[in-house]
Length: 60
Image (cartoon, rainbow, N blue to C red; front, side, top):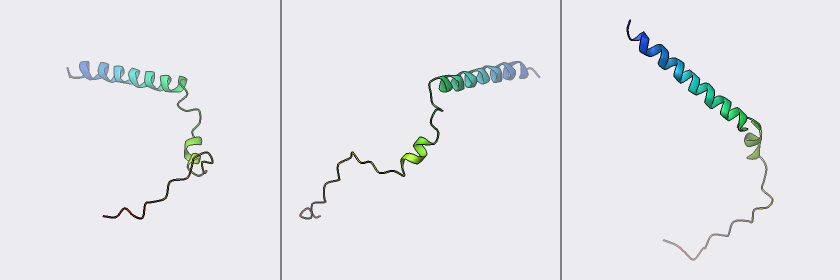
C-alpha cells in the first residue's frame, strides 16, 4: 500500500510532462500541415538537376 504514495505522484508528474510536451508541439506548429508531407512524395521536383550517368569504364 505504501507504493501508492510513490506511484500516484510519479504518474501525475509524467502526465504533466506529457501534456506540456503536447502543448509545446501544438504551439510550435508541429501539427499545422498533416497531409503535406504525405503528399509531397507523389510530386516531382522540377528544380533538381538530373543525376549524372553511371561511368561504364569503372568496373570491379
